[in-house]
Length: 335
Image 1 (cartoon, rainbow, N blue to C red):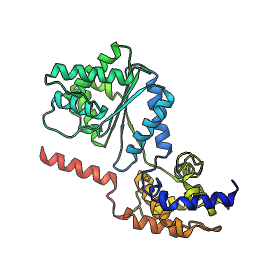
Image 2: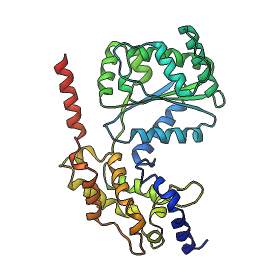
Image 3: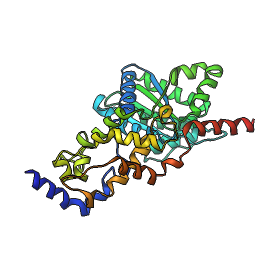
Image 4: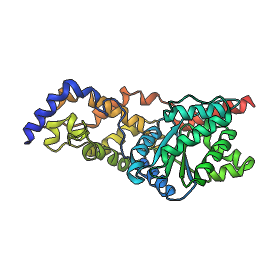
């Protein structure tokens, strides 16, 4: 298919597929430097039996996208592995039975759940064993881990031990917000065995720090993505096929985009970087104009990026450091 035919073929799909483009839905999973770093650490740990790794992150940093990427990449690195994501809710009094039922629901367990706690435990153990037996490896990801109660960690420890005895390697990955650091410090004093098991080292899942980070992110859109599946068209090519043909690449916009964020960050970007959520919003807003704006000489100027950033309400955000301080202040007042 020649270049003209490619452009025409892409345009022909717009009526049915354009609205589902990952950039236009702001849900693209991109291999950003933070995601690559986290995945490398997780998979390195996964080579060791009974290993775990924990990350804390500011809100909107992209940890959900990282979890999605891990779900996609884990079977490639560890064929036949099981993968489960559990998101606990904040609670005053945890119940083991409720935890087990939540996990069975996440797995998609369809049989009738036993009434007795012993029966529920057995069902969960057997379900996880079946999920992981093909590759003898289970990835157990806990999102919003700051909501976990110490008792729940104790129950999970027993579950991991049960699987390990049966020659199933279990990699536990915790993702939480900044409160996870307080939880880590508290458990290190009160229950060091749980800290050693689940978060011996707490890593920051960082935001995008500079134009170089953004360039890697945008390069993914240009060359390392595909939409629709099987087409061979990258995210950038699909949105701007004529411009792409004539050399337009989002990665060339990295410096302008970062400086546009800097101009509206209130001076905090050099400390905090840019959260992936705001990059996704900016990409969505410039992408919405793609159908009518694509042209041989199309480009995205810094003013265009600044307009997208303003329209995303980035300027009205609460900086993570301020938000964290406010949460700590509220907690101290309640004590």
